[in-house]
Image (cartoon, rainbow, N blue to C red; front, side, top):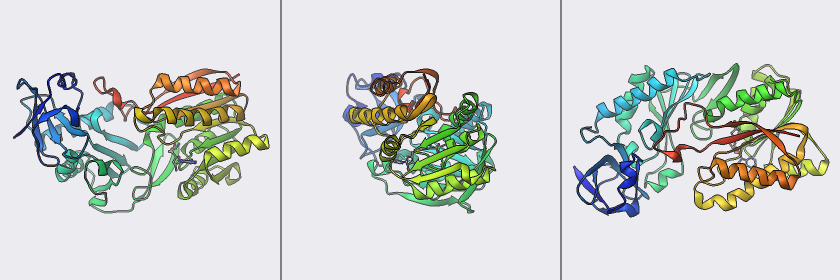
Length: 393
Ligand code: SAH
C-alpha cells in the first residue's frame, strides 16, 4: 500500500474527519489515479485510507478513518447499504430520489439518483472512477434494479484528469422517464437533462411553494430559471391562474409546458419564455408588470468562495428586480445553490436588494436541500442550497 505523508500541522482537518487532503498539504508520496493510499501524519500516525488523485487539488479524498477498514468491495457494499437504509427512513415524497450524496454518504465523488426503476450515477473523482465497475454491480444488487445509466459528463471530471463518459453502464432501456413527486407527474431524460436529469434537491421546496401560493392566494406567478417547470406545476397546483416560466434552455421549457398539460392544467394558464432572466426582469419592469409570487432559482453563480463577490452582485441584482416586480403582499422564493455563499451572506445580499428596491418583507421560511441530499456534521462544505421564502409588505 502506498503511503502519503501530510505536512506537519496539516493533519488537523483529517483528525476532525474532514475528508479532503489538499495538494499543498502533501509532504511526500504519490500513487496512480484512484489508487487506495494510506495517509499518515509527519510523525507516522495513521490518518485515513483514501483515493489518490494525481491531478486534482483534492489530492486525496478519504474513504475511511478506521485503520482496521479494508477498502474493498465489502467496504463499498457497506457504504451503499448504509445510504439506502437512511433513505428508507427519510420522508421522501417521490420515486425520484438521491441514493448516494457523495461525501455525506462516505463516498466522495459518487452521486447516484434513482428515477423510478432506473439508476443514474456520476463518477466524479479518480477514486470513484477506479471502483466504478464494483460500485455499479453493488448498486444493482442493493436496489434489485437492472438499469444504470452513467452521466459522468460533468466539468469537474476534467479537474481529475478524467474524460467525460455517458451511456448505459448496466442494462438498457428508455432514457425518457416519469417520476411521481408529491401529487405531480414529472418527466425527464436521463441522457439529455441537466446533471442526472432533474433537480431532486428542490423537491420539498416545490411543495412548500404550492402551499404558500395557496395560503396567500397568489394568482400570477413568475418562475425564473424554471428548468422543466417544477415550481410552475407547483404554482398551478396551489391555485395560480397565470404562470410564466423563464429559462435559457429551449428543451427544458418545452418539457415545462408538457408538464402543465400532463398534470391536468390548462395550457392557457402557462407561458414559456426562452430568454435571459436578467433581460426579462428588466423588460417586465419597463412594461409595469406585477406578479403575486416570484421564484428565483439561478444556477451556481459562485462555485467557490473566490467567486463570492461577483456572484453576490449578480444575486443582489436579480433579487432587487424581483422585489420591485412583486405586487404588495407578494411572495418571493429566492435561492442560491452556490457553496461559496453561506446562508448569512445570502441573507445579507437579499437584505441589500430589499433596501435598493425599497421593499421589506417577513422571512416566513428558511429552507435547504431535500433530506436525501444530507449534510453531515464533519463536512460543512456539504451545505450548498439555501432559500428564503419572503412575504413582502
Ligand atoms: N428551478 C429548477 C432548477 C433550476 S436550475 C427546478 O426546480 O427544476 C437553473 C436553470 O437556470 C437551468 O435550467 C438553466 O438552463 C437556467 N439558466 C441559467 N442561466 C440562465 C439565464 N441567464 N437566464 C435564464 N435561464 C438561465
